[in-house]
Length: 125
Image (cartoon, rainbow, N blue to C red; front, top):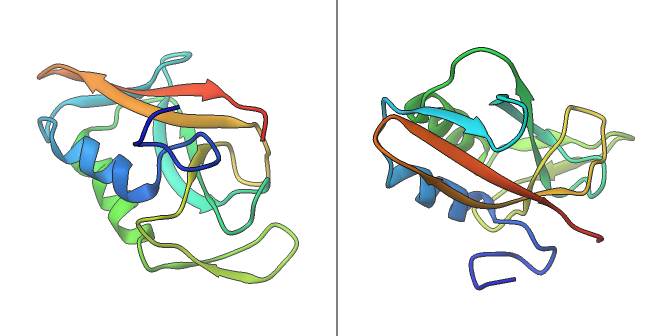
C-alpha cells in the first residue's frame, strides 16, 4: 500500500495534515467522489480509536479543513457505543458520516494551485 499508509490501508491524521499543508491554503478541497467536501472529524464507527472525516456539499478550502484536522490532534472523541478515545497524528483516518462504517480509506492527496482532491479507496479491514 505504500509507506504513507497505516496498517489499515489509510493515511494517518498526521500524514493527511502534512500532505494538505504542502498545498495552496486558498485552494478548494474535495473528495475524489461526488463533488463532496470534507467537513468535520468524529470517532469512526469501524474502529472507535480511529477518526472519520465526514462529507457534504458546498465549498471548503485547505486552510479551513486544516483547522479541523489540527484540532483533532490530541482531542478526545466519544465512540459510537461509548468510551473516550484520544486521537493523535498517528491515528488512521477514514471517510464516513458520523455513526457510519464505510471501509473508505483516505490514501493520498493531489491537486494544483486551485483544486485539491483527497483520494479514497475501499479497503477490506
